[in-house]
Length: 359
Image (cartoon, rainbow, N blue to C red; front, side, top):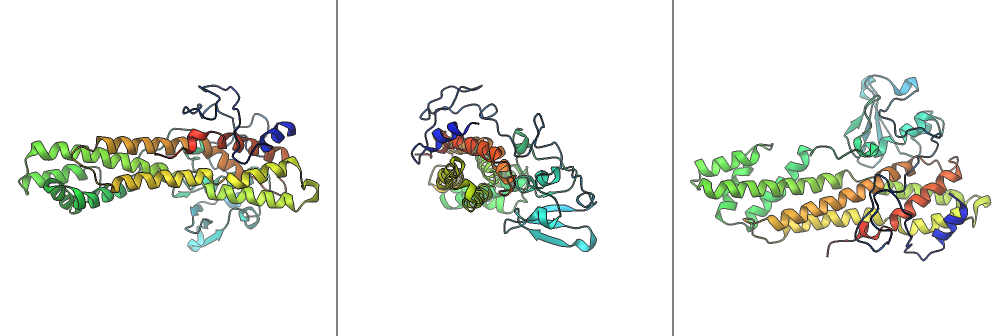
């Protein structure tokens, strides 16, 4: 990427409207179009430090250092946002942040293990823990979303039960009461309906269709929760971008440089994906609380499906780029790699339909 092209992007007003160059799968290059380009072929992201022709991320977390291959050692996501490293002996747990983890583990910057370690926080957004040799989660490899996790289905079902008890008629109240007494699981709706029919005396012709529709609604909302939970770590990407900008600002060689100006523009708006993700989830949760006849939840199911699709679009466009920004080491990463990531971010921020909120 030439510095002249970067200057053309940064010289635009703060809202940054770019003309997207033709690419595979694009329907239109206008930033105001309601059709998004195909994310699989749109503006490929190259991870910093990767060699020409190297495939990154790799298929598995195969570290080269012997102390990172100890049996029983795992990485866990800490509630504070750091990385929890659990050692096999005496179950010792060491907490470190992303920026200093390689120093704690004695891993030189820019090496294979350094780049692999920087993938760990992004991977922990998709799985509970990572052990050496584990596969890299599908979203980081541009694969299709994972099957629906049962925890999201339980959370969605709990929301639905609360709503049933508050807004539904006699049948809905009975079903909500039966679901409270039914252990969570895939057969929860069927068992609750059976209780309503056998113990409550409700007709099967009424309860069975109601149960099927409500199960579809619970599944739709659970997919929204799953899509929201698997979003990239936008906050970590924002911190890394601000840290990179601060590092360049403290280096006289880069003061006023085109790259510094690009980072200045990005810092002002890089929070847009995170805010959009939070707003889409809030819209889905608010829709589940709105008064609506649950006997005919077709519109609500459609709304939840559309919001889930919007969250997936956001995730697919940003997952790889967010992980690539976490691989930046502000003091040592090649400036050309940082310029390329700036360009990637500017192009994604120019996709206005990606950030359009419902209503």
